[in-house]
Image (cartoon, rainbow, N blue to C red):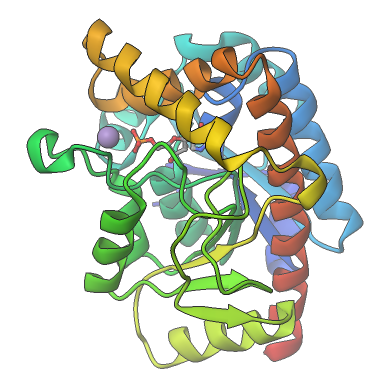
Length: 305
Ligand code: PSU
Ligand code: MN
């Protein structure tokens, strides 16, 4: 295993001294946002994690290694490469490492890497889920299976509105993944606080969430947890406008025959285009908000031990 992991000195030191650490994914950098906003966001997210008392560990596959803790140059490289970098989920890891091809890690691949390093908290924008029309296409993100099996808590702004929220919740229930709402009973839908669905449990503080994680993993109830943190009110988009934008993006996707791993990046970019960039601003704000909460939970976890 050690041949494939490359942990930055800062993250190594943090692991050794049991400091709070927050894992961060790289697909959101390369495929989730345009340059240079993606680079600025990735660096600001790291700063927010630090400001809230934890060490950031951005993760990618670089030159045959799973790199945990990236340099500014490495983040810049991923940001500039954009879609030229391969979007790497669980199934892509062995091929990319063996061939020394670089990859940007999805939620699933980032969870695997974090778990290998012993990092339990992970902040991102939104997770993958069951796509609309999945009963025909079978398109269900590998993120969900990872949440079913890997002991990492993912702080996100709920389930992306481009997905089928109801089916995603059913899937998560079947695989025993708790969906927690941070100070909310309603499941947020990425760009909006509203979704029309409920989370499983409303949590009032980072400490309460840390206690739940500790309990789950002490009992060896394997798998992840979703911490759904609503987009801040000031950056929230209008629910009906977003539903319309998403419907339009889904029609465009069908017309162009876009499928599989290209689907999520396409839909996010299309929604951004339709909303004249408003969805991107909201996306960035919610990622910042998640980085802060993840750091607070990671710090609270230290106190639990
Ligand atoms: N949410 C975002 N931006 C993203 C993603 C999610 O706001 O770029 C990425 C994540 O890396 C997630 C992936 O794991 O999309 C899901 O892709 P798929 O549906 O193909 O599994
Ligand atoms: Mn998919």
